[in-house]
Image (tube, rainbow, N blue to C red; front, side, top):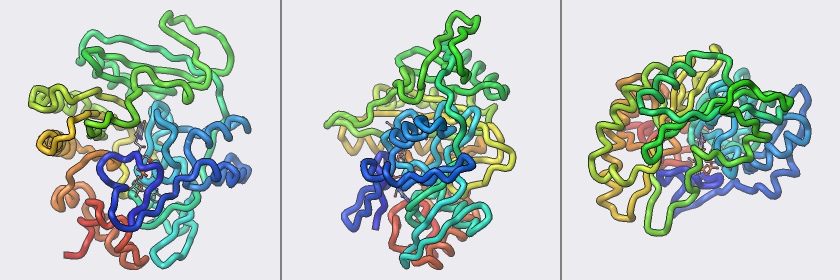
Length: 377
Ligand SMILES: Cc1cc2nc3c(=O)[nH]c(=O)nc-3n(C[C@H](O)[C@H](O)[C@H](O)COP(=O)(O)OP(=O)(O)OC[C@H]3O[C@@H](n4cnc5c(N)ncnc54)[C@H](O)[C@@H]3O)c2cc1C
């Protein structure tokens, strides 16, 4: 059985010729949201972020981290991690989950949190559905702030962009950050939340109301590829300070056919987590409090040879990411063989095997590389 939210992950995670259980039901989900007080809200996993954020804003609240595309399911995004422009302040989406209702292979449903069934909690969030189906989640919210001061900067060179990004990663007073490299342009967006229209002195400042609902000009990517293309996306998350060598690896491979021509954009986010954040087993979280995500987004002709060649480039980049102490973001294209999985996740693979056996989940999402790597030899 394969679990699917909105099906926007990029490497066949939600494709199967067997049973498919689809949770995405944004229209009916909205009526099931429950305000629990104390800034907590209970949400069905099949809701999308667009509907949830609209609901929260109407009640004077907001979710601290939103991705740049909001028509994904709450359950599907929490099953991979969830990062966005606000991650520079608030870390991953999974860092703001209070508890989850998880259904195992016997149909037993249990609430899991940092205190109750903490291992299931640690493995389910960012765990691609390998320890059960997330049915409902309780999320922590923050006060709604309508306006964001957005400062966009064009950088003359990639080196300048890297230096700027690393400087922003050192600061703890920034509310939003992203950067992109596309068609020879190097752009960063830095921002601060503010209630009130007061313009700041910086002449490149624009005050944007309800930023999550405006398209991000320097991050927008096509949701679906054209019919004759496939979308091969991947993101690497490395400790702050390591963006330059990670980008150097991409640049070194840029001229290798077919990356040259297929690469649509590079996208950079900063992720700052609190010091007591949970070390989720498979989410792209490391021990460094501040990390930098580098998204490598390609669009490739429907030709198996071209896809294979791009996957080989990605495999080389993944090696470099591991050497730099980083982790892959598992919603994307990552060829994880058993030995690489072992290097990345170590004893958590054995623990995943134990949890899947104990909760009769061997038949759920068994095609995923982490599930395969966790299978007893
Ligand atoms: C246009 C676009 C922009 C994006 N931008 C961002 C971004 O800014 N930041 C970011 O972090 N990501 C981004 N992503 C990636 C996106 O967050 C992931 O692909 C995410 O998984 C999408 O959610 P989904 O509902 O489509 O999940 P799916 O693809 O349906 O599922 C993802 C995984 O979770 C499992 N799963 C799904 N639902 C459940 C459930 N209820 N319980 C247990 N397991 C489940 C599936 O089996 C699968 O392994 C983007 C993707 C697209 C297409």
